[in-house]
Image (cartoon, rainbow, N blue to C red; front, side, top):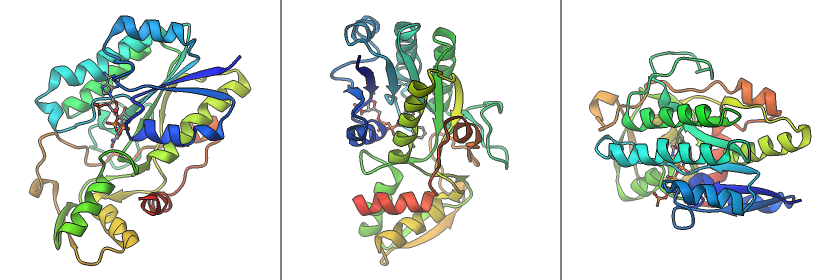
Length: 288
Ligand SMILES: NC(=O)c1ccc[n+]([C@@H]2O[C@H](COP(=O)([O-])OP(=O)(O)OC[C@H]3O[C@@H](n4cnc5c(N)ncnc54)[C@H](OP(=O)(O)O)[C@@H]3O)[C@@H](O)[C@H]2O)c1
């Protein structure tokens, strides 16, 4: 019997990276969909799709990810980040196992130690609140699910900080970048690999250890240092990076000041080795 894995939001950063590595897993039958093939806000269509395709696992990469735009686009943001997750959860319960992706923005960032999966949440933005609401409806409707919170995601695909900085670094001679927000970048290709390790582990042990996990690359940095590393690896020497405070670079949505994630649980449970963020950044820039 084939193991059917539904990838939602397959045209996004993470969904695209999952498709890149699918050839390494011939035992799995990947079914990539994005909004055109399967709009997750359509409840009946979601249920029918899961039944018709005999889905065993769902990797939910679909999301409303425009963090600043979400402050004015509250209804659509919740429709995708909460209600669509509920549709998946209700349709999958007892049939398919869900691996859902969430965010460091569920935290307020008012700490100085890496966030454990058990730490209290307190999102500061509409996006963060909608993602937390998505976690809650998932665990209520389909408690045997896995949630992986990640942070500062980038990839060769889609729009992300690395690609923006590479473009601006070539266009400008000077850039102001925030230095007082700490976190860890996550190369979507590494996260994709970690997600498939979860499924491989689950198939091998026949145990699906439901609950919340954290995944990012190893290490800690700031947006300023991240940018300097991007420029160094890409050989950009014509643009100077200036450190500024969050107050000097206001954004519509508040970001956590500190959002380093503690990855102990995911590393131990699934025996995952997490690459250092600089090494992964180098790999991504080489691919771009
Ligand atoms: N990006 C980050 O820095 C970051 C950080 C932490 C956590 N995360 C989380 O990581 C996950 C993956 O993020 P990503 O950066 O890969 O996202 P992404 O590139 O924005 O991709 C999300 C995909 O979902 C699709 N989608 C939107 N509405 C949909 C619907 N109703 N039905 C089906 N698909 C729909 C989007 O299509 P359209 O483009 O047409 O809307 C897009 O292709 C998300 O859960 C996100 O919240 C991201």
